[in-house]
Image (cartoon, rainbow, N blue to C red; front, side):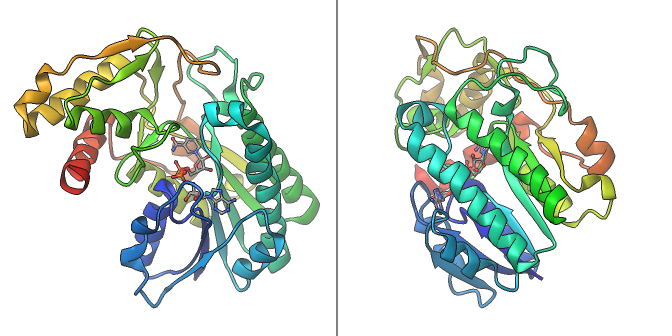
Length: 321
Ligand code: NAD
């Protein structure tokens, strides 16, 4: 079985690549290192089942090349981050919409069995209903959210028009090993871990009462595997929330994080937290209903936020301290 994984040098893509190589699949990886890193996949390069292409999903020929003979595509490549898309909507659109369409077209032309793609909780936009159920979305609040919603629309149309099987996974605030702590658009958890480890005060946007459904990477891997292999016909051309199904405020999350890190170094308990202005495009609360994933995909998330944070802290401590 051959799986194409785009964005294979990124946080989620590299974890998927490692997981499926360990399971004996043949993996074709594609990445242009826009935000991913060679170090995430360097240790996999010697594996005879791994073929890596450095290239760009904006180039259709590259997309055709990687899809030849593939059974599945796990499409992760995109430019993440709401603030990035507000600063440069043109590039986010080129990569996340044109690049997505290239990959979907190439997958369809190559006759892949199923195209599983990274969708996003940002698609819920200004909808205030909680928990978020897949069928009720609001208006997008950022260019990034638009691109991710357009992905879903294209996937649905391709399913109907060409019969290709697609599954969208709406990821909710994923965290865990290998997530990049550096750069202007780093996600909060790895950024805060690094700051605590250096005794620097993390800066929270807003009062810290915003809440998120923080989702550990291993739950996301499980969802990708189920979405790829499920034989339930209801899976096809559908979208699924990919989350743990609990909501935690930023303040509570930081508290747990600090507690875990203080077990490694007691001095971290004395690091203060600083509060700044709220950020444009941020939604106040996010919580997924995972009923659909549980019922149709038989998803059973294994890691709560607390368990995931303990794992992530161990990884950052061992690898980046
Ligand atoms: P990441 O930035 O670590 O990974 C994205 C990868 O895609 C990087 O390796 C990057 O170099 C690659 N890439 C970017 N542009 C490319 C291009 N033009 N051609 C080829 N490769 C390209 O981010 P991630 O957190 O691993 O996100 C993976 C996917 O999940 C993305 O589609 C993202 O939008 C989506 N997502 C992530 C989260 C989250 O919490 N991390 C939440 C919702 C959705």
